[in-house]
Amino acid sequence: MTALTRFPRFFVTSPSACPYLPGRQERKIFTELNGAHAGELNDALGRIGFRRSQSVAYRPSCVGCNACLSVRVVTGEFRPNATQRKLIRRHSDLEVTACRPWATEEQYQLLRRYLSARHPGGGMTMMDETDYADMVEQSPVSTYVIEYREPAERGGELVGACITDQQADGLSMIYSFFAADRPERQGLGNLIIMDHIVRARNAGLPYVYLGYWVKGSERMAYKTRYRPMEVLGPKGWSRLEEDAAAPVAEKQPAFA
Image (cartoon, helix red, strand yellow):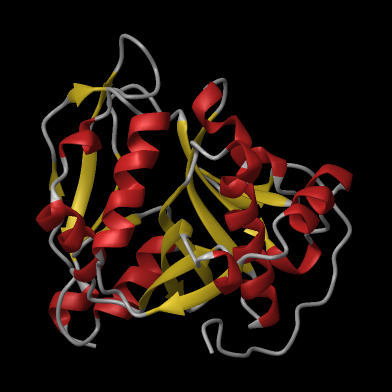
């Protein structure tokens, strides 16, 4: 590993309005991911709470606030509850494909529908096709786009997608979007998470990284539905809730 990879240069953004807690400001620390060891660096940083966006790894570094907590699902011990099992059965007809990170017009149009339905005032609504292509394709690590489609006999429409990194110890869900305007397909976001948990567990990967959780934020509450979950604190990773341990399967490729 090169010295540049072992000792990356970090930078800090200027403060801006916090998107999760009113009246607060956010600041991020970040570094570039490039070169032959970008994947190793991303894995190491992911274990201490960093997230990837294109060729940058970042994490919150807010003055006087540590509300954003990294969370990950322990895949070997996850057992869906009755509601989650019902959701899996409801969408069991979907066809799921792991695709190489190549942006398509179909994906982009689904993203626009999703943002319009769920985040109409968000900054991502300004993204054009080039911005979306950069988000998908500018990845220096092992990345896939997981597509969720209607059955071929019903037209094969794309109804969900997730940009996903495969790291050494798990899958990191970078960004997911879906047909939030289809009442008959309610719960697609939850289904995508559970599909990733199953994929990771079958591949022998112990975790699915869900990004940041802010206690008390309604937008973030869904992340705590997947137990057991670990949260990153000053002393490292610990259980958000105690559960009995279960063995993890032998490692296999997550995206065979």
